[in-house]
Amino acid sequence: MVSEAILGRITDPQFAGCQVDYVDIEWHETFKKLHKKVTHSGQQIGIRLGDDVLRNGLNAGDVLYREGNDIVAVRIPPCEVIVVEVDRGHARMAAKVCYEIGNRHAPLFWGDHDFQFLTPYNAPMLSLLSKLHGVETRVETRSFDLSRKISAVVHNHTH
Image (tube, rainbow, N blue to C red; front, side):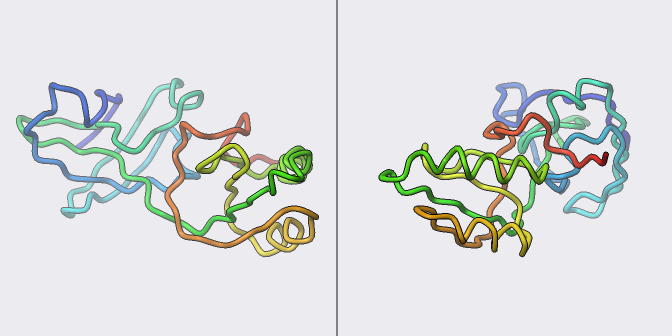
C-alpha cells in the first residue's frame, strides 16, 4: 500500500467505527517526506508525502491510508527524554534552559506545565542541565507530542 497524503485525524467522524492499524513513525522522522515502514499487523506501507510535511510534520493519530473500513494511522513510539523542571523561585532559569538546549540545536518541547521542558535524551545534555541552579532533571520514557514543540525545527541539521 502507498500513502501520498494525510487523510485526516483518527478522531474525525469519517473514521468512526473503522478498524485501525498503526504504523510507528519515530519522532525524529516526522518531518521526512519518504518512508518505507511495516504496520503493527505486518503490512508494508510506502509513504510519499508532499512539501507540507516539511512544515507541519506527521502527528500521532494522522490517518495515512484507508481501504473500506480499514485505516492506517500514525503512532509515535515513546523514547527516552530529559524532563527539565525549573523551580518557580528561579523562573529566570527557564531562559537559560531554553538557551542551552537551543544552542546545541536540540529539539525542545513544552512539558506538562509552564516550568517543565522536554528534550531528547543524551548524556552530555543531561550533565549540562543537571548543573544549572534551580533546575531539576530526570530521564523518562515518553512520547513526544509534536504540537507542543517550542524549537522552530524538530529535524536534525548540520552546519
